[in-house]
Length: 146
Image (cartoon, rainbow, N blue to C red; front, top):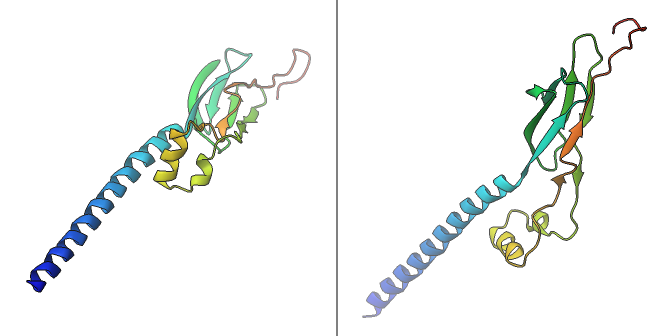
């Protein structure tokens, strides 16, 4: 009888451990996917010259204007090119939201979910501003071409 209790107790502990571990792994996957989705921003890049070719981190996004998805807390390099003109560069900025504690959860899904449940903002390190104007520097008619 004692032996059966011991086996039952071990099975109960094993089942509980498996259940807790499985739930934690599932929660980590869903939270990681959600965090990856919220870690980007869409920016709009425009030029005063409608013929300027615009790039974000080396990727062509359009002529005259375009949009791109950038990663938060990592500056993206914007570039405007036009034949016969000097290339213009600019980096994106970011804004820290001191009301958010999401960055301090250190990847812990329960803390991230708790901070969301309390209504804490996800906008830590969001890209700011979301619209940029980058125009190549073209010589005037009286200057020699660049």
